[in-house]
Image (cartoon, rainbow, N blue to C red; front, side, top):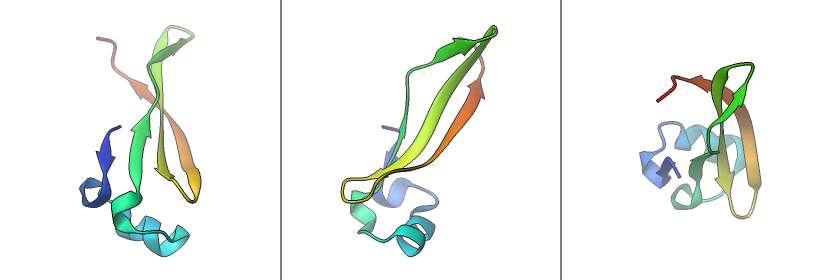
Length: 63
C-alpha cells in the first residue's frame, strides 16, 4: 500500500468519477519486476466495492 483515504492526492477525483467513500480508497503498487533490463512497478487505485482502477506501469530506478 502506498497511501489510503485523504493521503491520496487524487482521492476527491476518484470519489467524483467512481463513487465510494474517501476513507475506503487505497493506492497500491506491485513488487518490482524487470523487462528488457528495466525495473517496473504497476500502480493502481482500489476500492473494496468498486475494484482496481487506473492501472499504470511505472519505470523505477534500480536499487
